[in-house]
Image (cartoon, rainbow over all chains, first blue to last red; front, side, top):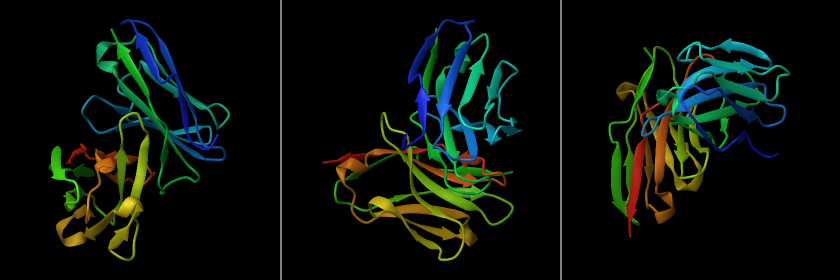
Length: 114
Length: 112
C-alpha cells in the first residue's frame, strides 16, 4: 500500500490477556519505530528496528513488551499479561533509510485494557 | 538531556487570524526538528522539518517555522488560520538514531 498500515485499529483486552499489534511499513523502508501515546500525551518512543535488527529497545516499559521484525518488513508488538496502564494508542512509523529523516506514521492501534 | 517543550497545551484562534505555536528544545548539538499534525482519526502528518541551512522553513498547508538557536526555539506560524487547521500539533526533535522525541502537543481550536 501507499502508507504505513496497522492492525487492528482498535483492540479491547481484559487485564491479563496477551495482545499482538501489527505494523506494515511502507515497502522498502529500512527503519521501523514503535511509539506509545497515552491519552492527552505526546507519543513516547518504545523501540527501533533497522531491517530485522532491533537496535534500540530502551523505551519498552517492561519485560511484558516484546517487538519483532523477523524478515525486515512487517513488525509485531506483543504485550503479555496486559495491565490497565497499557491502555494507549500504539503508533508505528517507518522511514526509507536508517538514521535521520522524517518518519511516516500509521494510524495507530488504540488498545483499551479493561 | 534531550527534550521538547510545548508551553501551550490548548490554543483557540478565530478563523482568519494568525497563529503561532511555541516550541522549545534542549539538545547538545545541532538539532533536527519537525512539526507534525494529528487530526482526529488520522495518522501523524509531517508539516515541515529543519535539518540545516535557512532558518525559516516552509511547509505544507501554508505553515512555516523559524529555527532560533539563541532561543532554542522552533515556533510554528501561519498567517491566516482555516477551520480545517483544528488539530493537535506536535513539535519533535530527532535523536542520533532517528528516534523522535515529542513535545506534549498543542491542541488548536478554531472559532468561526
